[in-house]
Length: 86
Picture (cartoon, rainbow, N blue to C red):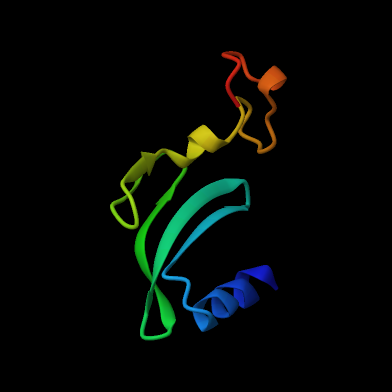
């Protein structure tokens, strides 16, 4: 229900941008949506293995795969990471 309810709740109170990080079928995606006329419209999106880049509300770029641990599953901790960074 979060996928449906949360964007509409945020839109109702005027949150200008909505960033969704989603892991379905073991494929991580990131999508940035902008509030336009009371509805969220996509600005940028990317799946793991490609670059997600946005300019608003600030510049940011990442390959979504960087949010996963080395084995491709979420939830890495500092001790799980080979370089000490989670």
